[in-house]
Image 1 (cartoon, rainbow over the protein chains, first blue to last red):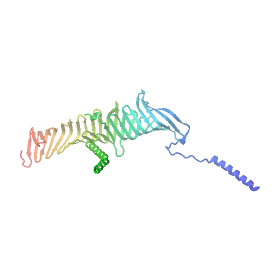
Image 2 (image 1 turned 120 degrees about the horizontal axis):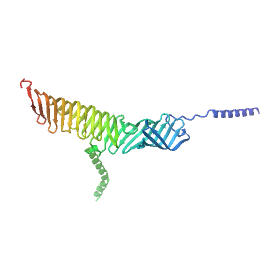
Image 3 (image 1 turned 30 degrees about the vertical axis):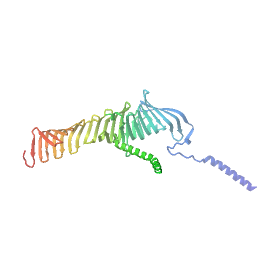
Image 4 (image 1 turned 180 degrees about the vertical axis):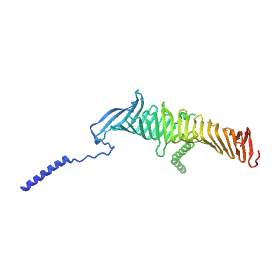
Length: 195
Length: 218
């Protein structure tokens, strides 16, 4: 009889301790590495569809109208992920400067830094720009692009490793990479070869 | 009959590969024959200014190289007006074309018109002909005008003058102003001198003097 009571008491203690431990010592969730974005981080209601955002340069003379089919907001990082990305750059007079198409974009809410990844294509009239990555800070006037820079028109080709440009894409500096210089050439049939 | 059939089999078996090899060889030979050096502009950094759907101006900085037809121009800085084909070049310039080489500190001109002006420490070389001057005006590859502290070196001829016109089609050099120099042991001076590079004949005019160095007579 006495042994039976002891056993019941031990059983109760074990159950109480078990409940206590399960309430106070939940297994910690695996932290994501910085920059690693996983769908586990998404909180309910953080994913939106068909988003439109507008950004401006320093004097609001140029605006980026960003359209994206999907936008993700991550719980632990104040970052918006937009994919795919279509950006229309407009002047203050609402004239289209160019259109940008990319696979993916990450926008850091605190810093205003936008990292667009590709392949990226920008079409400005007859000019076509290609790059792997573009970074731009909201309110800034300079775009930085890296990776397989390729600019072409019916008349010429420019190649490089990285580029820096104003937001209007009227003045572009193309840099060479390791062992490879920036390169400009005119296409066959352009004015330069028709003398 | 059997031999003929065997030949046919061999012919059928090897016809296609042989044909393919021939096509490949022909294509490679054509490419090599037409293998012109690519034209263009290379540099550590190239800044492009765009206007009206095209490049308006190019600025190449750092180890810049411009290849345009036969012209190979190396410099620290090349400014290239793309529509107008005019250039403005600075710093450690070397220009080489088929038959001559040029060094200067600055160079400007038009590639399409083949007209250039080189300035500061100009050095020109074409085979045995070497000319130093302060500036050089190149007019459509036909006439090169050297001015300022001109020094001509050609084989045993070494002459200083105020200016030198090099008429390239005639292979004729015309030096003017304060001519002073020597041809081997022969010292010469005058106001005008012509040197025909084909006949290597020298013609001195205007207070012309010839002095034989070893004999001490005129």
